[in-house]
Each structure stands twice: as structure tokens, then as C-alpha cells.
Image (cartoon, rainbow, N blue to C red; front, side, top):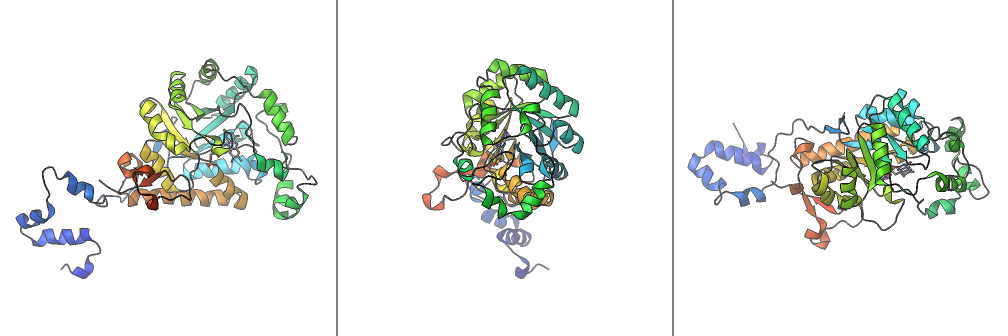
Length: 395
Ligand SMILES: Cc1cc2nc3c(=O)[nH]c(=O)nc-3n(C[C@H](O)[C@H](O)[C@H](O)COP(=O)(O)O)c2cc1C
């Protein structure tokens, strides 16, 4: 016997009313005018079956358990001995993708052996085609699934924090940084226990040096004229799923599609290159509208919560990429930190979908988004990125 005390929301009361009322009376209450679109639009979207939420997405030819890639980050072992291998293994465990950087402290072969998860290699185009092709061939031999070419680093960004802190790569004690290292003895022990520091994917050039050496290495070796013809040569040498990372305009996205890219990664290098460019979440809609039917669009940058992933997907992104969140977790706790970070972000993504009444990522549409410009200032969250889009829960 139903009792009022057993109803916990309006939907419960509606079910009980329908049971008790003669049909005409129930429909008199529930119905609306014409096609009842306004009734529907007014109502929140909770009456959905979300007993299981399907977050799988196939991206660059491999299925992800939920739509995230861990972004390529150079010299990961500087932060924790577990380094790239530890991160790649946690990515596989969580069912997300992992991208190894050209500037990685683990080799293509080591990562190839350490994980069977979706693996992408991030290529910086060097002005030596033989070296570029050699890396591509190594990726093929090591069983990588996808290649991505980063195009936003032809000139090194101006990172004034690094100049102030006296960062050297690999880390070395200098008069300027001595105190900073002395204050972190646990990091020092871990780092010193980790063996020699090298950049095995770029061969002899990765032997080490200070930031100036690295900057001059980049200046000397980075290709400063990445032509679309060169991109096509890279894509055809690789012959598999191919992404371009650093795309920020509709024009370049179209050219990427014509050059044979299977995905574009909308990225400003996490704000580390050209200051003042738009947040990548603002680019998603236009680029998806231009090429989304032909090419996968991946959003990179600013993801800090599962709800941020959901926003990007609702705008039309196929998947997201994240860098600093896993680096912070790795730096603090090593592999268990990365595991926990991924568990939290996965749970947040799933919970957000559930709260939106979506039984899977494929149910997300732009109707779940309200653009910041469309809502009053007092509702806008100015503190955290990405905040340009606000979730909304409507039919
Ligand atoms: C410490 C660090 C190192 C990075 N190294 C590379 C790299 O070697 N290659 C690359 O394509 N992007 C590199 N990136 C950029 C990331 O791949 C990614 O675009 C960025 O971190 C995304 O922004 P987020 O940190 O807000 O997620 C690096 C980012 C950081 C923070």
C-alpha cells in the first residue's frame, strides 16, 4: 500500500496519482497544449534508465572504457621514478589511452612492452626526416596504435617561472635551486634512486644539459617550417590512425582533414606556448561543425573534473586529453596517485552523466549545455576553467 511517506520526489507522486485517478483526470493534470513541447522543455530529464552508464568510445581505432587520453608530457620521470611506464600502466588499468612524448624518459620500446592499452606516440617534427621516420618505424615495431604530431611548438614558449626557479633538465643542484631541492629530501631520494636520466626517443641529443641546452637543442632540431606536404609524408609513412595536436582554427582543422588526419587534438599546449589564445573548450563547436563528420575531435587542456569531460563531449568532442592532473597525482604519490586520480575522474564523469539523465556518452547533446553568454553574470563561475559552458538538465 503506497503511502505519502514513501514518495521522495514529484515523480513518485505522479506515479501514485496515475494509479489512483481515472485516466481522463490524470491526463488532464499531466497534459499540455499542442505537441506538448513546452511541457517537456520545462521538465528536468531525470526519468531515464541509468542503471548502467555506457562511457565507451572508440577513438583512433581503439576502444576506451571512458573517453580520456593521458596527454604526452616530456621528462615525466623528473616528477617521480615511476615515470612514463607507471603512468601508461595505470592508464591501461583504467581503460583510457596513453600518449608517450618524443621527449619521454622511457623509450618507445619500453612503453610498447609495458602496456597493451591504447598507445599513441607524440611526434615533434625534427628537421631531419631520417630521425622522424626512424621514430615512426620504431612505433610500428613496438605496436603503437596511433601517432600524433604536435604542431604548436615550432618556437619554444616563454616560461618565465622556469627562468626564475633556475630549472635545469635533468635537475641539477645550482646555487639558485639548492634550497628548493634541500627542502624536498623525499623527492631527492626517489630521483637519485631512479638511475640515469635520458631521452631515449631522440637518441644522442637526449643526453641531458640545462634548460639552455635543451632550448638550443630545440632551436637547432625542431622543424620551423611544418608544411602540409610534410604532414602528409608523416601520415603516409605511419599509415595508421593519425592525429594532429595543437589545432586551434577551423581553417587548420579542414587542412588537417585534407592531409589525411583521422583526428585533430584541439590544444594550446596547456597554455604553455602562446599566451592569450582562446580556451580550447571555446573551439569545439565550430571545429566539430566544420569537420566532425570526417575527423575525430579531441579536446585537450583544462580538464580537471569529470564534468569538464562531459561538457566537451556535449559540445561534440569525441574524447578529451589531460596533462597536469595526472602529473600532480604522479608527483605526489607515484602510481597509486595516478590510479586514484583516474578513479575519481571516472566516477565524476559517470555521476555527471547520471545526474543529467544520460545512460551513456552518446546521449549527450548540445542541449545539455548553456553557453555562458546566454546566462546572467551572477550565475557565471569565474574561478575555474573550463567555465565557458554550463551543464543543464533539460529534455
Ligand atoms: C610538464 C608538461 C610537459 C609537457 N610536454 C609535452 C610534450 O612533450 N609534448 C606535447 O605534445 N605536449 C606536452 N605538454 C602539453 C600536454 O600534452 C597537454 O597539451 C597539456 O598538458 C594539456 O593541458 P592540461 O595540463 O590543462 O591538461 C606538456 C605539458 C606539461 C604540463
